[in-house]
Amino acid sequence: MNVALINPNLVMQRNDPFTTGIVYMPITLAYLAASLRQAGHQVSVIDAYAASPRQSRKDGNFVLFGLKESQILERLPQQLDAVFVYAINLTNHLSTIAIVRAVKTARPNIPVIVVENTQAVTAYALSLVAAEFYSAGADYVLTGESENRALQLLEHLKNGADESKLREIDGLGSPKFYNPPADVLVDQTLDNLPFPAWDLFPLENYWSLHFAHGPLSSQKYLPILTSRGCPYPCGFCVVPATNNQKWRPRSAKNVVDEIEQFGKTLGVHEFHIEDLDPTISDPRIREICSEIIRRGLKINWKIAAGTKVETLRDEETIDLMAAAGCRYISISPETGSPRLLKLMRKPFNLEHAVRIVKRMNVAGIRSQACFVLGYPGETEDDLQMTWDLVRDLTRVGVDELALFIITPVPGSAIHEQFSGYNSLSELNFSPTWRVDYERLNRFRVRLYARFLWWKLRYHPFKLLRQPFNFLLRRFETKMEMVPYRALMLRWFAR
Image 1 (cartoon, rainbow, N blue to C red):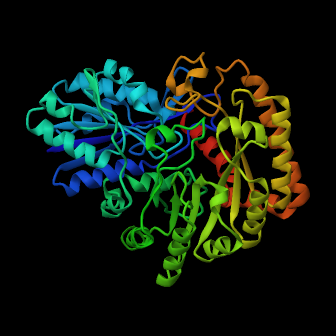
Image 2 (image 1 turned 30 degrees about the vertical axis):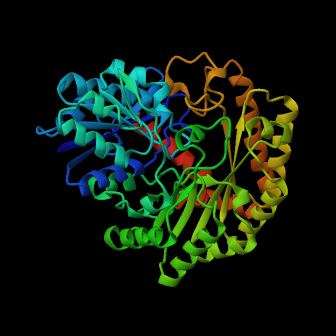
C-alpha cells in the first residue's frame, strides 16, 4: 500500500520561548516508517516542521514553525491508501489537529490515522482525547507502540476494513469503538525491529539549526532509543499509562550496531539517548559501554531525556560511561521534599544522587537536575526543601538546573485535578492558565538566579566557560543552548 507519515509543526508559546519550542526528532515515527517499508509498503514522510523549520505563522498565543497545511497537502502522493499523523508531543496538539482536518478535507476517502507517541514524557494518552481527533476528521487513533499495530491495520484496510476485524486490533480506536493495547513490545522484538528510517527525513534541516533537545556539540547528531518504557509510577507522568510500567531493553550489541551503522552511513558521531530510563539495568549499560570501547568507536553520547539516578549504581559505572564517550546525564530529583516525593509516588535517594553527581563532575560528564513545581499539595516548606537540595547539588558540581511547572498531561494520575486551560497545547512547562502560575514562576526565576550565584561561588570556571560555548555553538549543557534556541526561534518568528 502507499502510505504517508506526517510529523506535525513545532509549536512555541509566544510568551515562553525557553521551555516551549523544544525540538524533538520524531524517532518513533522513524521506527514506524522503517517497519512499514520493511513489510513492503511504499512509504513517504512529510516532516511538517523540519521541511521548513525557519518558516513560521502565528496562531493566537502560539507560533507554529514549518509547512502550512496547504504545503503539506501539496506534498501528499497522488497514489495514497492511508495517512498516519504523528501526535509527537502534547504542546504540538493544535498543529496535529489542524493537519488531520486539512488532510481529511482534501482527501476525504483516504483513511487518516493518528499515532500515539509512547516513549516521551512530553506526549499524551490519545485514548483520553480521541474525540478531538475524530471531530477533526480522523478515522482511527492508534495507541500503544505502533509498529505491529499499524501493519495489522493496513492489512485490514487493504481487505475492505471490516469493522468486526478491526475491533480485534488491540490499541485501535475509531468513533465507534476503542480496543485498549493488550501489551507492549518485548525485548527480543525490539532487537528485531529495523533501525529508524532516517533516510526519509530532512536530517540536514535539523542539523542546520544547531540546537536540539539535548545539548548539541557536533555538526550532526541523531536520537536513539536503547530501551522502551519505565517501571516507575510517578503521578505527574503519562508514561505509566502508555507503557504499563514495563521497561524493555534492547541488547547491547543491537544498540551499538545502530550507532556504528549511522556513523558509517550518515557520518554521525553524536547520539542523544531519548529513552525514558536507559540505565535500569546496570550490567546492560556497562555492556553497551564495553562494546563501544571494544569496537573503538569515537563518539560522544548524552542521556538527554533523563534517567533515574539510583539506577546509576556506583562510581565505577560512571567512569566506564565516561570512557565510552558519555558527556551528559540528566537526572530528575523532582523535589527536595520527602513528603511530596511520596505523594508523587517517586522514590529518590538524596545521598546517592549527591555522590553520583560528584563523580560525574570528576569524570567530565555534565549533569542536569530537573525539578517540578506546583504539584498538588505542595507547600512553602516543600519549596524551601527544593531550594536547599538545589544548593547541595550545585555545591558538588551539578552543571545545570531545569525547573518545570506541573501541567496535567492526559494520561497522568493528576490529569483530572486541574482545570482552566482552553487548549491541550497550553499544557506545557509554563502553564500560564494556572491561578498560581505567577507565584510559582517568581519562585522559579529566583531559584535560577540563585543557582547561577551558587555555581559562580562553588565552580566559577564552569560558569565562565559557558559564554564561550554559547558563542562557539558547542553546547555542553541545555542551559547554554536554550538561550540560543530562543533567540533563533524569535528571529524565525519575527
